[in-house]
Amino acid sequence: MESPFKSLAVTAAAEASTAATSVLGAHLLRVVSKAKYIEAVEPFLERLVDAAVEAVAEQRAGDPLASLVEFLGSVLEARSSAPQGPRSPVPVGTLAFTKSMTFFAARVDLEVSELAAATQISLTADLKEDDLKQADIDALGHVLEAGGLPQLKHFRCVGRVSDPKLVPRLVAVCRAHRTTTTPLVVSGLDPAATEADLTQSRLQSCDALMVAADLEVCGALATLRLSQNVLRDAAGAALGAALARHASLTRLELRECGLSPRSAAALGEALTANTALTELDLGGNRGLRTDGAASLAAGLERNGTLRTLRLHGCAIGADGADALADALVANTALEALGLEEGCALPIGLLRHGSPELDLSRRGLGDLSGLVLASLVERNSGVTALSLNGNRLGPLTGAALADALLQGRAPIARLDLSSNQLGPKGAAALAEALKGNVRASPPPHLPRTPRPTKPGVHREVHREVHGEVHGEVHGEVHGGG
Image 1: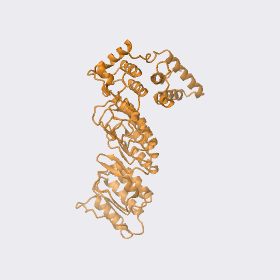
Image 2: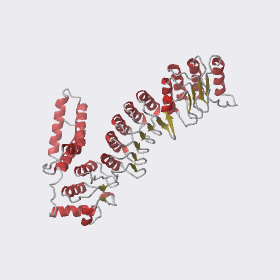
Image 3: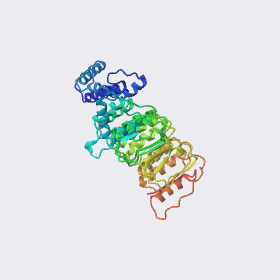
Image 4: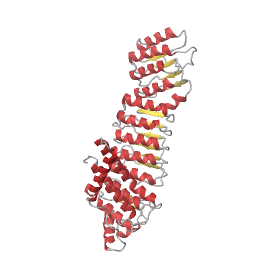
C-alpha cells in the first residue's frame, strides 16, 4: 500500500526503536521500570499509529482493520531493511570509549578531564555546518551509557540544531539517562525555575521543540515567555502537546511567533486537558485566522481555568469572533478577551457586573463588539451600558441591534457616541431600543455631551427620545 504517510510511519518506527535501545541498552538487557520505558518510547509509537490511521482513512478501505495491518506490515518491512540504530555500548577504559569522549569533548570545547566533571556544557559551533549531527547524539549516548558524564545536568543545544528530525533523537537519549539530580535538559531551561523569559531570543523551530520537550522536567515553571521568536507550526504543535500535560504552568506568552491554524489546533486541544493555565497570549500571530480562532474556541468550551486570552492582530475576522462568542456560552471561566491591541473585553463584568456598566474609551473594535453583543443578548441584568469613545463600527451596530431584539437584556439606555457606527448601524440600534424597553425607567449613566453640528447622532437621539421617552427613558447615542 503506497501512501504519503508511509515515510512518516517509517521514521516514527525508527525513532521508537532508537528510544527503546537508549532505555534498554543496545542488547535490550538493561532492567528499567515500565514507566520509564513507556515515557521514552510512547511519543514515537503514537506518531506511528497516527500515520497509520491517516493512511487507512486516505484509502477509504472497506475493511479498515485489514488495511491497517497491511500498512503496518509494510512499515515494519521497510524498517527492517533500513540502517539500524545506535552501536553497542562502549565500556569505560576501552579505546572506543576514549575515542567517544575525545570526540564529544572537542564538540563542546572542553578537555576530556573537564568534560567528565562538567555539570553544564554547550555545543559550541560557530558555523552552520557544525550544527548538531547524528554523530554527536551517538557519541553522547555512548558516553552516557558508559557513565562517563555522571554530573551532567545541562547539554545546551539552543541555536545549534537545524534538522528537526534530530531533536526527538537527542531528547530520547537524554531522557533515557535522566535522573532526579541530572535532568539532562537541552534547551537551557532551569528545571527548578518558576519563570523563564526567552522573548526575542532568536529561537527557531528546533529550539522551541527542545523547550517543549524539556517542560516535562520543569515541574515548578509557572510563567513561560517565548514571544517574538520564529517558532512556526511544528514547535506550536509540540508546545500544545506539552501544555496539555503540564500541571504548573499558569502563563504562556507566544506573541508574534509565526503560528498558524495548526498550532492553534494543538493549543486548543491542550486547553481541553490543561487545568493550570490561566493566561494565554497569542497576539500578533497573523496566520491564526478564522480556523485558528475556531480551534481555540473548541478548546475554550471544555476549559474551566483560563482567565485571559489575547488574540489581537491574529486576523480572526468576524467569523472567528463569532466562534469565540459561541464558546462563551459553555465557558464560564474566561474573564478577559483581547481582540484588539492594547485592550481587553471584560467578559466577567458583562456576565456578572452591575446594572450600570461603563466601558467607555477602552479601544474596543468591531471584533470585541461582536462578542459583546452576544453577551448582551444573554445578560438579563444590565440596564444601562456606556460604550462611548471606542472604535465600534457598523458590524457592532448591527449585532447589538439584533441582540437587543432577540435577547433578554432590558437595556434601556445605550451610549455609543464617538464611535464609527455609520447611519445604518445607528438607525438599527434606535429601532431595536424601541422594541427592547421595559415598563420602569432604568438607572442613568452620566449624559455624554451632544454634538453641536447636525448629523446622525442628533437625528437618532431625537427619533428615539421623542417616541419612547414618555414610556421609559430609552436613548441611544450613535456616532456617525
